[in-house]
Image 1 (cartoon, one colour):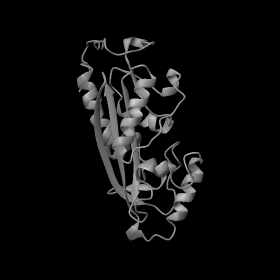
Image 2 (image 1 turned 45 degrees about the vertical axis):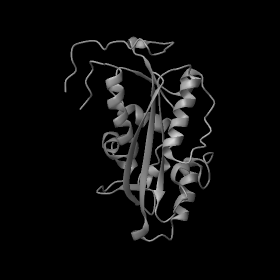
Image 3 (image 1 turned 60 degrees about the horizontal axis):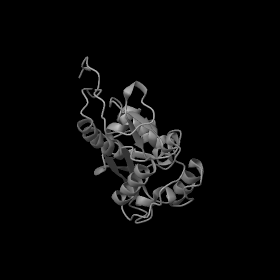
Length: 230
């Protein structure tokens, strides 16, 4: 679709201290630069300015006490929405479920193993060590994601998932903040997540699916005349 030759309308109910090009803010509730870049790419084309918590001076992090992806996504969205003073917020929680490691990772994936303070390389090295003796037939896995959007104080949730296999070693350079992308190969693909183009990955990934669903709702709620990129 081609963009119409009209300017996007301004959503008066959005809070923003800075309005470059008259675009209201959408706070992406993550301090993970890799996730922020992925989410921003999926949302490309919306008449909004995407910011991270640190862009608004938010340095605290939410306590992810939920037992499900949905619960943690809502906790994050609510935390950043309130910390920002009411800026519309989109957050997500995601993880991987490994059939050979039942109940081990899931919604606490990054906190598992070496923990979230470990470097991407340290975390991935430990993970692959645990998978070392797992045969090919049992290396199946599924990435899951739930995104939570708070827009004008109302909460919306969206889900996405992607099945695949864990490779025996990294098959692409590690994407910052997304170590598993180097060893997760989606079903029907010859490449791991990290070796796919951003466009290809976002089309099929768990996070791409959830954020794409959120994008449709944001598009509707923002009453924009801008069309989505094809």
